[in-house]
Amino acid sequence: MKFIKPEDPSLNPNYLPPPPFTIQELRNAIPAHCFQRSLFKSSLYLVVDLLLVAVFFYLATYIDYAPFWLRCILWPLYWFVQGAVGTGLWVIGHECGHQSFCDSKDINNGVGFVVHSLLLVPYHAWRITHSQHHKANCHMERDQVFVPTVKEKANDLFNDTPILNFLQLLMMWIVGWPGYLIFNVASQEHSRRANHFEPSSPLFKEKQRDFIVWSDIGLLAAIGLYALLSYTFGFTLWVKYFFIPYLWVNMWLVTITYLQHTDARVPHYRGEEWTFIRGALATVDRDWGIFNHVFHHIGDSHVAHHLFSTMPHYHAIEATKHLKTFLGKYYLYESENIFVSLWKNWNYCHYVEPSGNIVWWKNNAMLKNK
Image (cartoon, rainbow, N blue to C red; front, side, top):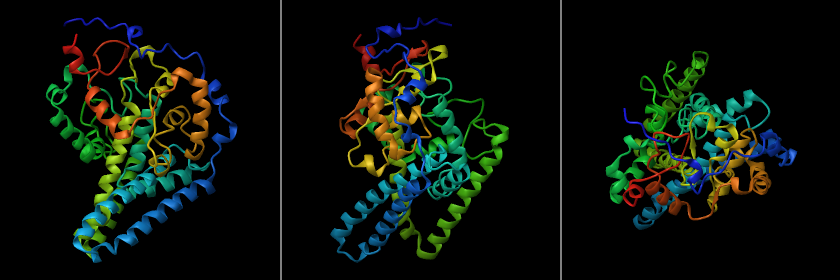
């Protein structure tokens, strides 16, 4: 077996030494009220999102009365807007999974179960693996989301061909989320195929299996509801009113997650180099423009979220301001256009080295230029 000498991580311009502060010091830098959860306030955000979904659905019932040329504009507009609001609802379910909706665990899980099931997400199964992700962010052997490909397994064809690279990006948008749930793509490898629906999946412990069953029941109930609506009102209407906005939700979800954890500045760790703080800081806050508000600041306050995941989203921006001052060079932020960043990172971040306890994204062009 060929021995590969690990690179010296301190030579990388993005290298930062272990943080000189503790998690308690970070917590003390944030006003205490930012950690307070309010059932009333969280419920208001949920109600507003549900009302927006209902309003846009109602307005869409008039689209087919418009001239053909106008329908060609209004239907895509509805799909886009409804998908964005649906993503906001997804984030509310995400809050519930972190127990940040309110102080009651039962209410958190009850609201999250309903919201995520209606969005065809296996709530408890996702909640469990997402918790593992937060406990091991950017750990090469333990993280669960967008785990980097090592050099030997990188797809050279896509890495060197922009058109095929773009097609691969489209594939992520369309099937990336169901691929993660069904086949555990972009995650850790196991002794057998893992998924989010099988109670005995390697992703879960035996004591968690009842939660997976409940997740499946929630999904089956939602699928049954949509089948009934499709049978009653017609498959075409179901596709237009629900399924295409649902695809937009999936697209936003994988894009948000990808950009949170994929950047040339973001290191990945092996062994003892990883610590919780180092992992939590290995994420990028980005400016999503108006979508900062639509998506409940999941993209521009993600550093705070990884450090303190039970903090509700409506306090995260205030907390981020204090964290940014305290963290200094340890705070990663990007203000450029989201889709510009997406294309840059998609073309740059292809693999990491198979050895070394601190590694960064690379691509084939870097090797060719050496």
